[in-house]
Amino acid sequence: MRTVDGRTDHVVVVGAGLAGLSATLHLLGAGRRVTLVEREALPGGRAGRVERDGHRFDTGPTVLTMPHLLEECFAAVGRTMCDRLSLRPLHPAYRARFADGSQLDVHTCAQAMEEEIERFAGGREVLGYQRLRRWLGDLYQAQTGRFIEANFDSPFSLLNPDLARLAALGGFGRLQPRVARFITDERLQRVFTFQSLYAGVPPARALAAYAVIAYMDTVAGVYFPEGGMHAVPTALSAAAADAGARLLYGQSVLRLERTGERITAVVTDRERIPCDAVVLTPDLPQAYRLLGRRPRRPLALRHSPSAVVLHAGTDRTWPELAHHTISFGAAWKQTFRELTRTGSLMSDPSLLITRPTATDPSLAPAGGHIHYVLAPCPNTDIGPSAVAWKSLGPRYRDSLLRELEHRGLTGFADAIGTEVLVTPADWAAGGHGAGTPFSVAHTMPQTGPFRPRNLVRGAANVVLAGCGTTPGVGVPTVLISGRLAAARITGLPGVRRRRGAPPPSAALEGDPL
Image (cartoon, rainbow, N blue to C red; front, side, top):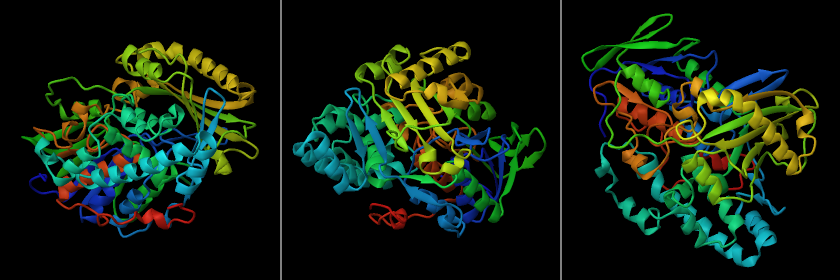
């Protein structure tokens, strides 16, 4: 593994999102002095928070999986997660509702899921699910050490024994056909393939290897932190402060000073910070702007679809909603074609509806509720522009409310007392390429060693972290990216559990594993 040359005593980390906080803790654990610079007044980055009329809206990810990666961040500085953060496993992990009126609770406990599938689709599909679950576990084991949690110096880094194992498992085939070998019910197939949208690729075209996301969601378990998702970066930043990091909030980085290929100082709108190395976690366009260069690639980067998010504070709720509910439209292939090819809004939308107050009522005023409605949409490269979204956004919000009413959430619009609407225009204003918070898509030319590297030519002491670089999009992978960035500086892998050992999170109270 290539590492940063020269002194690395003092590292400046730009961005206090999950990647930056992970990098900070792993750097501190390796004995480095760290200054963390964040333009916002609070940590979190994409995992931010907006407080409105007594409601605490989490503005970023709502699904938390693989909590052992958080535990590794705390362990890097000699702390345990339970010192700072309390997680509750969600049962069910999801509720799936379909256009034909059927409904399926997705359980991570194998027995509970088998019983639910038998009720939903019959005993034959239970047998297929059992084989699918074993395959998902094997796929995860084949990928986690040598692919997901690895720094790549070249495509030749792929040549290891796990590559043959992954190929034998069918990881280089297509996701939808591979899952269809196990289960034939089209509704069930959706439950185990929709996750490829996180990677920015339709299930029919995504590598089967990305079923590892379904493993995280449907086998390893889904959790929710007490105090909401923003409690995660809050806890990580507190641990960093306790371990000696200098945390600078409300400061924007204006430029990087350099001598030759080395960055010698980070200049903010308030001060100049001399440094020995830098970790950049902003989205790739911002990181490359600061570096003054963009790596040459044979093909232009393709971005994932974006999303419209309606954060609604309501005076009532609907008992048919679980903590996480996926409301599938009748269309499926057409939906992905619209999101990734034609650039049009979903004509028959599939929606993620999250109700965090189902688990933590303190996030809303007494008697109130929070509903988070996420509607995938095309990014601004192929769909409506950021400028167009400024007028389109309110109209699309109204159409979403009509759709929710049509799907049985009667009175949803009238129940809203306060709200925050986020569209691709807002993501673009925040510096996210193509107006999407999901960054660069996981197409084959943008996966593994072909993804934008976390080392940048021409900047000898700069490392990238975040969802645009290795290993990719999602809370677990972003946390890993911070550790991988720290390893590029320290030469140390960080806190790692032995291969095959159960994640420490299996000891959490109520965990079905």
